[in-house]
Image 1 (cartoon, one colour):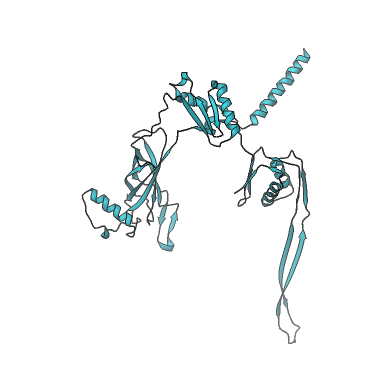
Image 2: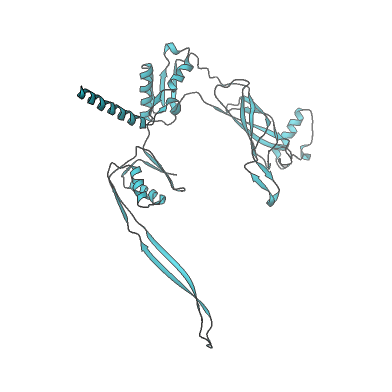
Length: 369
């Protein structure tokens, strides 16, 4: 009985230890590492004019603004000579927006308004009705409304002050969707998942995870796509079926990489970076130059003059080289920790990592940004 209890205790400890090891592994939902192919946003753009500015609009040198005003007034039956206009209260702008998936007619979306002339600010202006079209030339939304810039311009010339970018503004819910993109998921027989970071191992793990849950319905077509056949009993409930797949957990894989930012001295590394057995010697040569000035005063009643003399003192010292020997089981984290212990600066660590990569001892991609 005692042996049985002891054996049970050992097994419990082993199971607890194993669970701890797997808990340390990074797991993510399929939703966070892949998306359903075809479910995407669309970019919209349009040309419009902003009115109601307080003298901060375009000058009369902006021909497109003058023509836009003339065309707008002509639509209302007003014919004028555009050469006599002074459009200081008007600015020509480009309006951009993103049409999310699954929006319907009558829904509203945000738009960004950006000046394309020489306007100083579009703060407080109102965007007139502007059709927004996609790359295929079709109009999918119409924008209009007050522009909020979140910035300002005060004063003139060298005494002025500017905060943020007063020539770019936002119209919250400023566009009404006039046409929706076809995105019906009903009665679909198959779907595809697109990996955000294509990888052979990750695609295979997604395939196995889905097949364990739903049977043999998934196939990794390539590192960036997993094809899934919708089971017959799920054909009328595709949305719920996709939600179930997105909620499955997978451990994504990736290549070993060390990213170095030389401008800031930042080093970011993955946990799967391996390093061969290496010996590192780090030292430095310090040169110090000091300059001092002395006054040479002649003896009393002599014919000499007071002179200022300069003395240069040069000192050269070489630091004792710090040697580190790391076994082949060491990773970059061990190397950086050892270098920090001997007082190496981030610049030194970056140079040493480059040297380790050049020596062929660093089994990872070294990316310098």
